[in-house]
Image 1 (tube, rainbow, N blue to C red):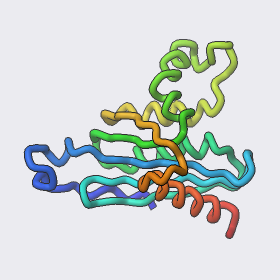
Image 2: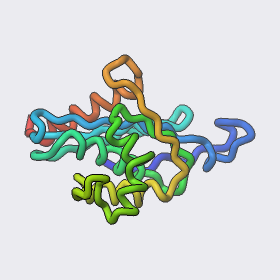
Image 3: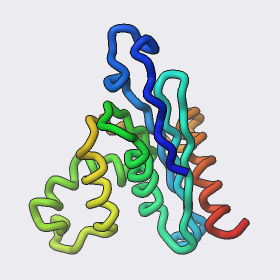
Image 4: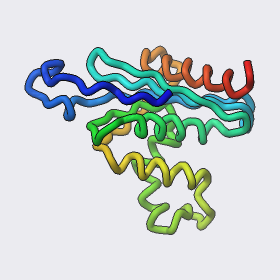
Length: 165
């Protein structure tokens, strides 16, 4: 399910090397019950090429699925890339852009001293993100954004797969 995006010729975007062409990644997580059966979805696009990824777990949370969507998408890239991650999760966008720096300084503890929730996935996302140049973009969910709507549909396919439907 995690195929690599094809290497594109530089002429898809004249003047830019294929490895510098940004890859747009749209991600979403979904959960039926929280916790409950959950799914994640990611749509990867570069020029006219795209790849869909999805998966799910029988017992999880929406935040874990939002994180896993980004991790799986970044892991699917075969080489360091310029990436724009579009997520409707402020938890993911704020966490990776702002909060993670303090968590790491405090040995994965919050400002209140509590352990960071989902630390296993935050560490995995930190590692996956370190291989790429990433712009983290928040988009309003369920507002008709085509990439976000497709990621949502993929996440719901993951829920169905995880729940046996």
